[in-house]
Each structure stands twice: as structure tokens, then as C-alpha cells.
Image (cartoon, rainbow, N blue to C red; front, top):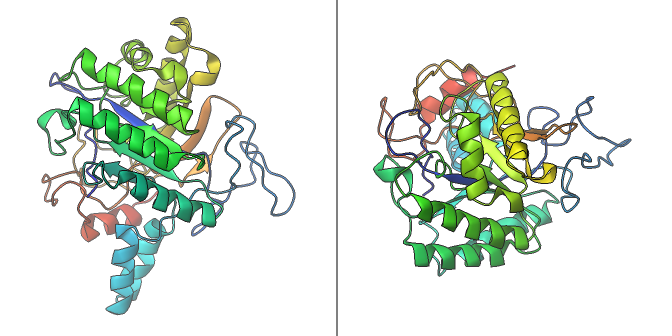
Amino acid sequence: MPRTARRRRTSVALALALVLAVPGATAAAGTDRLPSTPDTAAAAGAHVSVARGVATATKARKLYVDKDSQAETARRAAVSAGRTSEAKKLKVISSTAQAKWFGTWNPTSTVRKDVRTYTRKASKAKAVPQLVLYAIPDRDCGGYSSGGFDAATYKRWVREVSAGLRGSKAIVVLEPDALGLDCAGATRATLLRYAVGKLSAAGALVYIDAGHSNWRTPADMAKRLKAAGVAKARGFATNVSNFQSTKKERAYAAKVSKALGKLGVKAKNRHYVIDTARNGRATAGDQWCNPPGQGLGVKPRWVGGSRLDAYLWVKRPGESDGTCNGGPAAGTWWTEYALGLVDRRAR
């Protein structure tokens, strides 16, 4: 079962994250088509083209909505039990495109098939799949989402994931928290470079996790991203599983991108995406584990016109961050929290 990435600013060892994301957007509740706004590229009628800022390999008009998500399972259960109001609220989450997390719960022996099954469903729906890879050694540095493979197994796992991705033109966010955390040293950057190379060669748009605006400085994160191989990726992702405001994240990401430029990274490898899944209120401060009073952020949409590629829901709303603030184990569905996110969502 997918585990949630940690996001905190502290002296404790920090971790690195790479996320695979695909540009796409939501025009209205229940759909995920690119909206017709000055920030998007749209053609007449139903023929919506991908904005010029997106890698040309990505041609799908919408992000894939996973019909097998925990949110959808909970919605169906509510319908069956006659809880109409609850089901309606949960549909706000289940009908929105979100990234699917792959990790140690997808062993090397099956992960190629698991990835291929998911991406083929997206292809059948003529949509872009979004994946998060979360299996790096010493994942989460012993925290609520601890785990991961050993280095040799991780490389084999990445090769299997890449084989499953080939031809899907997916978006991948790689290893949330891996770069922000410090527990693994230089070995982690080496493994991330390896993953970026394999995933990019498979045709994926790779975004390396780059923490958030309340953690590392832009200059520090830029150095970490360069060491992790961002020069072979599409760019980086911010605010994964966190609650910082979109305004702060845009400012932070722009500074990281600029700092990467000063380090010699080309403009084509300095794009970024922002996780807006749970930042509708942005009042969590330093709290990263099931903070109370939060709400859904803006729905996924392709932005374009700058190095900001898209707003995405990388973290799946309603899945717990861990056994904190009354929550169940990391990755476990929590209906009460999900309903609160919907009630307090950005409108």
C-alpha cells in the first residue's frame, strides 16, 4: 500500500524524492480536460492541444483518473450504504486525476506488470498516467513511511519500472523527500541519477522531488537536484504531500529553477510542477502529518507559458500521512479526514 512522503523542516536527516508527473488540467468538477484560459493552450472545440511548454512526447488531452483508487472504493461503499451526501463529497476527490504511487508493495517480480497495467488503462482512456516512485533505500529515514529496497534491488526495480513505462509517455515523480533528507549521503544521489537516466530513456517526463518552500533554501536544493541528475530530467516537483501555499511554492520553485541555471543546467531541464492536493487552506505551518483544518487545493491543470508546467495532485487526498493527529497508518484511507478536505476545499 502506498506510503505518504514526509515533508518537514528540521535538523533531522532529510530524504530525496523523484516524481513522475504529466501536464493536464481540470475544466470543471468531475473532468480533467485542459481549461480554456490565457494560461493554457487550447484549440477550437474538443481538439485541445498540449501547451507548447510541455515536452512534445506528451500528446494526451487529459490526465488519467484512476477508477481503482481508495477514494473511489470509499465512494462506492457510501453509495451502497445510502450515504448520499458523503458519496457526493468523496466524488470530488475520486473524479479528479491523481498520481499513483509505486513502491516496495510492488515487488521487482511484478512491478513491470503493475506499471504496464496502469499505463495501459490510461492509454485506453486516452489520458496521461501519473506515477510516483517511492522505494529508495532508507526511504523516509526511519519515519512513518520508512522502508525501501537495498541499492542493488532498487536498480533492478527501476529497470523493471522503466520497461513497464516504455511507450506510455507518462509523468513520473521520483522518490518524495529523498533529496531533502540527509540520512543516505552520496549514495542516494547516485541512485537518483541512475533512476532519472533509465526513466527518461523510457520516454517518461521525470520530475525530481525538491521539497517545499518551508524546508531547504533554493540554492541548497538546486545543488542537490544537480547532483541527482536533473540535467537529464524534465525538472522537479515541489510541495509533494505538504500543505504550503501555491503562492509560496511558485516563488520557491522559480528561485530553485534560477539557481539551477546558475549551476549550468539548461532551461529545458528546469521545469517544475506543484502538488496542490491539500494546500487549499495552507495553514499547517511546520506540521506535515495529518494537520487539522486543511482543504483541497486547486484541481490539476496544465499551466504553461513559463517553467511551471502544471498543478498536480501528487499526494492522494484522504490517504493518511501516518499515525499522528489521530490518523491510521501511512497510506491508509481515512474518510473523516477526506471529508474535511472537501468541506474546506479551495473554490
